Length: 365
Image (cartoon, rainbow, N blue to C red):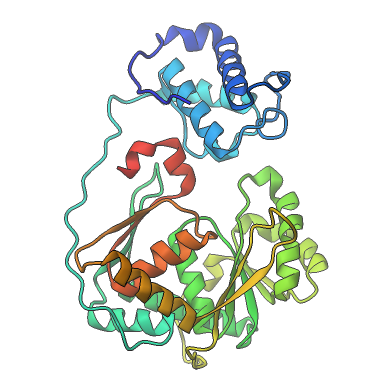
């Protein structure tokens, strides 16, 4: 599918005169491309992009760019995941702003060189503590959320916030060795919660976050099987999930609490945190379930650190390297290869949500 550029934009009056006709033509043309040789779907303003037209995330991104080029308008990036029908896109066009001449990207200054990797550490919390002690103000993650301002997380901030999250989780009843589901979108809160669970002695279970508010209940019903298999006692999720906490507890017998990142913020307090050993389980990674029920894979801290050290040797990571990624954090490459790799080697991670990359691929460059 050709993506093209923002040149050759249609005159603004097209959006006023015949938005619906132009939009449906774009949808119809793309549907023919993504499903060649198949019976054409009935394209209408209320056709479901995923169910009726078969548009996956890549097709959505392509439609997003074609609509922007055709109308000369810049759509909100959140629409890429939130839109369920062409009508949603049509509504967004009514209030969209003209597409700018450039994306307004600002080059980042060179990263400061890191130090030697923490070879003697045995766990991920030890890796974080090693870096936070030596260079607490060094940038660990630069998060580019898309249309908002970039957010920075240093090693010192991450350790402080993760300790506070661990204390909050302990106070809310998470016991050492218990599992905690983690259903958050790509954000700095994700890393705080992940390490907070580990510092509390718990075992994180990454889960695919819901893409659209209207589908949260269906999404939770699908993910409940993973939570049941893992025996999750706690689920850390976005505030939108809270109204369905009772439903979740009915589907997952072991689940006692559903908490939000805001409930994990604060101070660490005096509650002692349990020790974490190298042979303890670092997290449970579940398979996608594309060929059957999702299956959990146990990964210990020793497993992860051996993997990260082998990766570093194979690709010859240098102290002044920088990692850039848009991969989802529930995926092993996004979670282990990019985030944990940057954490271990002390090199900056520039991160954006997958939907921001799909909406504006040039931002990654």
